[in-house]
Image 1 (tube, rainbow, N blue to C red):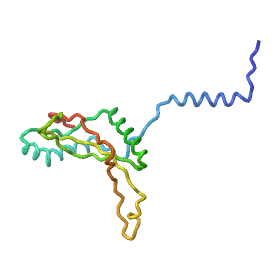
Image 2: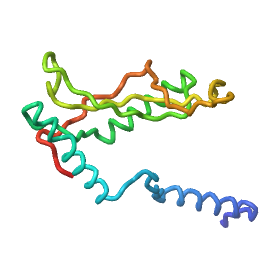
Image 3: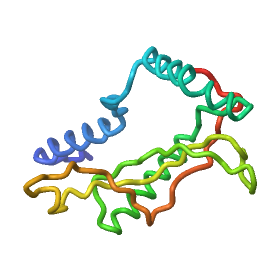
Image 4: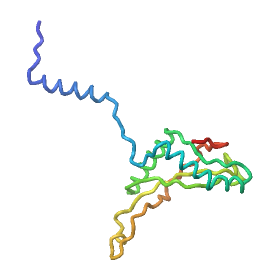
Length: 162
């Protein structure tokens, strides 16, 4: 018994197979325009050490941390959280602002007295009519104060040089 395959189904079947196999290919992602070379990163760190870290360390009396680590998984989850909650608030043009901070010496903190960073979600309100008047104001990213900031990454003690 011979199975007949309709000729007009052959082209869609081939197209479907190509689509199926091409979906398995790894998607290449280009780095953002803001990436810098390793040499530039090293130069920035050395400048920080020479112009700021020694002053802080001398003032504090100990070597403060100057680098912080967050897992990719934590950052992705935080970005997902920000996108989800900001959408519910009607916020668009999202970003993240990174603040420097220091844990108080008193209280239940992971590294009392040491520097830390915390991330705060932002949005850009381009629809503000004040920014389009006779003397237009620069666009500015606003903090989304109703969303929780991200903290509690790991700070290097002692700091790891880049």
